[in-house]
Image 1 (spheres, one colour):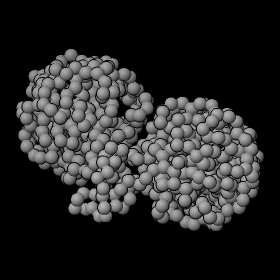
Image 2 (image 1 turned 180 degrees about the vertical axis):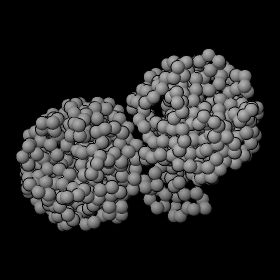
Image 3 (image 1 turned 90 degrees about the vertical axis):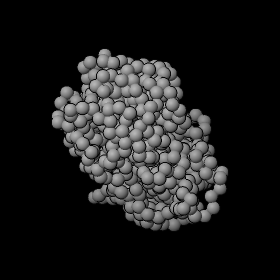
Image 4 (image 1 turned 120 degrees about the vertical axis):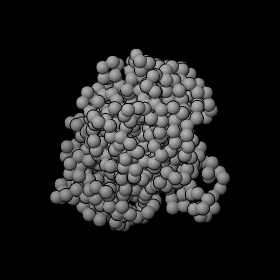
Length: 638
């Protein structure tokens, strides 16, 4: 995995202390511990008795587990908590119910030592942790309980009461982020679909988050920063299903893929930010199989290797899960070759993220491009919900990309963080369900205008990027239309062309920081729709689209004035349904589209301050039309 800055033996150039400090404080990064992510499988049951053994794997590799050491006593059905330094096995059965807590130092091999006691004796509880706090919830005493307890991972000592789950249950799964813990499924006494959420910083009770697809128990969970996963379990039949939950927005789980073999019996699940691993369990006989799957793209699990013995009732933990937000790197493509963070904001932001569209079937994947270089796009993550194809709008600040509406039509707003590779999350809703809308914005506010609902609309909405929530009404375009091209400066947002339903040459503008109806700016050089809007702080470009046939024409305006557009040059090929575009105020790019009879993977670029024809930049991972994308350095950002 890449580092946010180089280790001492790999550094080149000059690194200043304030650069390193800024990375730690602002980017959440720190040098990765050597040796990769360690996963420990602790305790369990191998007939005819419980075991004390701890098995270990390195998550980034494949192969069989090796011996790590032993718990202080043989037991199974433990909960877990871990940070980069310590792993804690909490309570369990010997076979009697215990309140014992053991800890190990993950970076070394050796036996566990006493940590303290849980404030209640329990088996088959479930736990999550961040850098300092470990939470355990539920379990059987032998009756099902709704207790949540807290330990301090930086010290030794007993657990304390920390609130309650919404319902008492055991044999459940847990996962989470650095700020939130989630508990899913379990039995109460019958199996449930319940997913609970709790703020780790608060001692209050958990609240309802959503539901699993199927009432499930006898399983465990893992997560990266944005998505939680549960794998296997009993429904009541043994299952191989991997479910995923987008943790930033309340909602139900969706299917992610399948394990190599159906398994229950508290098969152990943990992982890193990019890979989940599942070991042991019953199918119905005890197994030693370890599977792994990607946490960043939907796929089935594949074989990793084997535990030392066939076992169930095991718990797993790691020093690289989604609750740990320091010392873990961001996506490699967000860093320059020397390891410094690529800047964000007007004139310097260099990342364009795009997603969705059709290729030719609906495609929910996202891709990322570094605009200052030439080359192909790389995979980023996935959009969250249907509708997952054309035609979206997009707006962006230096930190967040918003994907707006889509086919259906839809009122969903999705968002992605530029500085964290992963899947999109729910932001809120537009004031109307719409496809073919156009978006832009400034540093604080995202704007979208027009679209089809299904008839053409003139509505303009706005949202505040930093606050997750629904859009508010801004005003109206001068004419109702869909598939316009939007861009602009920090002061103005301009909308060019579109269909109303005939193709139009109209250019409107608004003052982005206000709320009011749009004003006529002038006309494009030709009527058209479904091209791409690109801008610096002074110029807006309108590229490609459809004007009775696909076109390669690029025109431009000076944003601070009013008047008709002028000819800029041509794209490398005629195409429409471009949608995804970006700029770093020096260079503008257009991504994909449709050139009859096929979808396009072409990325073109132009130098915005000059005039002339576009040149080839590289290719998308997937040819697609009707996608949406924007950059973290466009003309609306100061």
